[in-house]
Length: 129
Image (cartoon, rainbow, N blue to C red; front, side, top):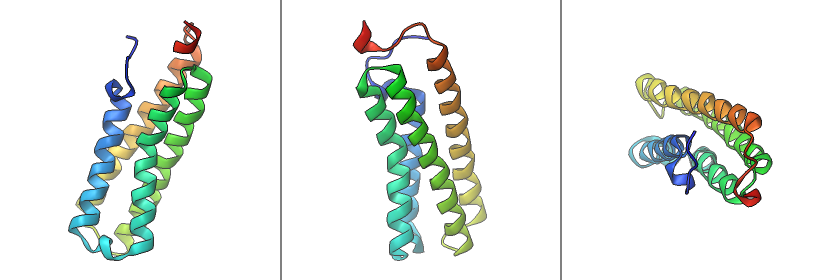
């Protein structure tokens, strides 16, 4: 695997950003925007996916990065739960739900694989170079 100079180059970050933007689109174009508590929760959780990837990368060590990636994965699961509530409250269609759920499930899978890669890597992080 190539060494990345920025978290923004990571595929898991790119997908997290896409999920966050998709959630924001739902907030601004559906009745979800008027469900203030759920809106704020899902906006925060989806943003936390990408924020934790960025923060973990910035720590410079694999152990810390793995820790923050686990937070990111948890935030992705939280986003999924909130998407279910968004669907149940009829703020979004089944198709919108399915589309975003597919992305969150892919993100969870990719983060898990990246965690496993980091756990088995001989390189311990940029701060150890």
